[in-house]
Image 1 (cartoon, rainbow, N blue to C red):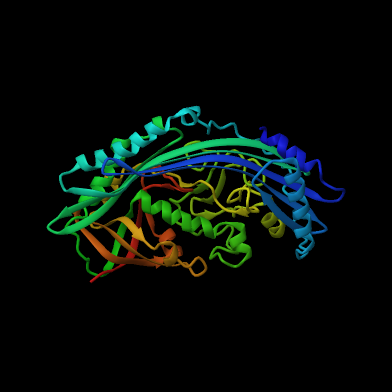
Image 2 (cartoon, one colour):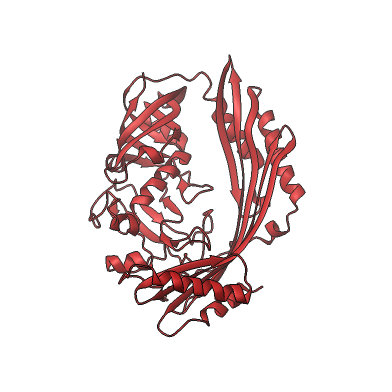
Length: 446
């Protein structure tokens, strides 16, 4: 069934003086977990539905349904109209309108995933577990070995002239390995992402998990001090996720961003250029259009340390007196659009992680963090989170350390960036990772 045609049917029922938007989607996702060479769990779910927004006299109403039958579409539109009648008037409410930005032609859908048999997906999960167990004699087992994929298609049609269709696929394998030595157990993870299963590298994911787990054996609490740290790409990606939240227009309007009123100011080291670019096909979350049907685009948020832009959707842009940056996001057809970054990354430097470590002399490699989202205040910028990693001594990785806290502020960390690595990695999230050297971070241990 053609999704655009369904959207057209909804929009054709619009009354004079009202705006109507139909978001029509369908998808399929699979998740497989292996344990001891067998399938521990297998789930495959299909979903479809339509979300309808109606805006009339400054009031917005929304309703959704999980079928495409004509009578259901009409009932859902009527429900959205009724809901609008109970809404509080807002002069800035309105649908997105075409802005002349061309939709990028991205190759985000893999026919190979669509035809990839389930038994081969199971084999990938089992193969991953087997590879982890064979990677090192100290690997005693796994917490998980899983294969996940998603295939989605969506259309947005509105009375304002939006009419877009897109489809995407993505998949990954991920594992958590357990290493044991002298009655001590440590864990480590590894993963591989792609558009279709043929792009997944099971061996690399297994080797990474084994290395992360085994190199933490024998770890102890470090002494409290101030050190230069190297953030592993996985940690940097999570850090960027926090930073991206402070750079969206909704956070600014609600007073939840430490960067409000700071456009044009130097907020970070000149080494930092932060970009949100969902048109980059390498990004796991790449997409041609945003949650309101506008073309996505490359948005430079911080340029050589200077704050240049907050991402906006149609509503936040109107309130801020600016234009949408094609950054509307949705949780699916069951929700109205919010705003957020979709594929953030730092412009990479020229050095490998090993070269950064060698040039540092003394410091600490942060391999993983715990509770990062709860440990950062996006308004004050206060930063405190549990971590683990390896000491750097004489320009080489040395003894592992754990159960310590790293503390600073987002403002200071951004200013104290000393180097950016060249090891850019796109991860199964809306941010990429890269090694990042930050000076003068407080380590609280023993």
